[in-house]
Image (cartoon, rainbow, N blue to C red; front, side, top):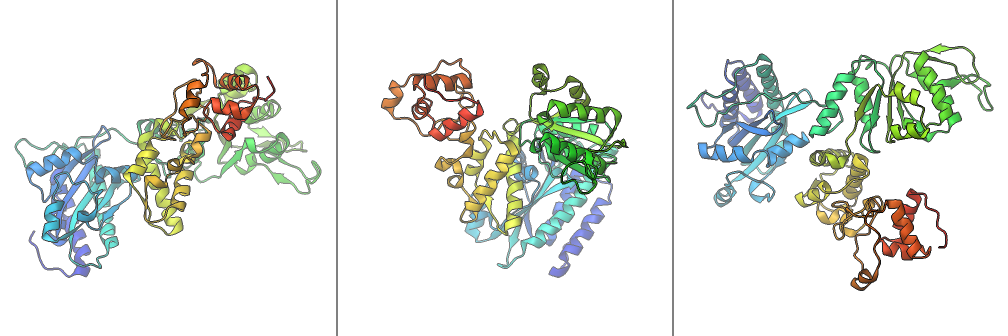
Length: 545
């Protein structure tokens, strides 16, 4: 293939044509990818190009490259997962750097930005994810020499997306066919083996590359096609409703309705009417017949959130519906049969509630057919950068901004404890982005930097770093103010026994302060407001000692 002069408006068409011919050739995958990169080198003046695919371990491996020597290829292969390709893989979003010589965050594995700067050449980096369906299987990136100051990078991104889509299909076909992808001995150093990888799962609108979330995704894919009742368990804000919706759309009932009800938001009477409906005249104000959520969800899925909060009396009514698959409207006597797939969710310890008599054991066995546990965000920290980029991209789209985040700010977010989980992270990103001036969120924009982090009200935090990790002390999860006490006060203040529970620690402080909350708060290094929240959480009523 020789280089021929082509008008700019035809470059993309010619490039796609040349690449389609390469994809039709019976080539080993690494050689095919390298020839694709050579097409860009010929028609688009790319200085270098790389294509990385995912290893079975879940890490990126550099597979094909152009414009590199053998030594440069080996060096780049060692750091590809920590640079921009790794970022693109985890976020699933394209990255454009208009001038790599002026971008301090650009980490080039063999370092040539100084040479480019001395020659006065402007080189841009454009990288896009390679996908098969919704799953990211690799990353393609090029370094392109830019001669026109008004160059439009959106056209480059669109072209690379199209090529990456073709590459993704080729990768899938090679893996399904079981093609041997090992490079022959003594071959070109640019060609490396493309190892087969373990199956990875993805869900629409759910971010999760960590092992714990991959386990959740696998369980969702396994259980979704059945009719079994599913119980989603986990702390508040872990994304149980999003998973419930994914289960519905992966099931045979995807064309039916998805109806959700928050059981904790309604009283027992309102909840009965909401779920079962009512007849005209059933009670004061019932002027019309009304269908309940069970009827509306017929042929689809009904999601009952906070199932652990319903009363014992209503539990008995719900149990009958689950057993008989029929119910009667409030004020009615005609049984109504429904075909509903039930998904429930709770953040309570149902086993303890059953043991205490707060939750019926027979209902527990009915709803706990398939249990899926949602991990808290602090146990899947490797997903935080992807979640931050996801929320930031959505914020930029909704507010017509182009905010980015610095590595230092990302470090703070990755080390927060996040008792509110993904919901708290989303709120933090939106709040921080709204109050950020300029185009980059830096560490000084994070609320922790000004001791305004709402996490302090919910969790014990280390002195100085207001939300970087929880204090492992007798205070447990009682919020601790990040501002240190004065040395004199610290030296004279008594300390609680290390084996006390949270509630007993509060009682100890109140006893030491003879019921004076402000003094008790100082003993625990808390503000009076934080101490008050802790008292409410543990239902401690203050009295004079």
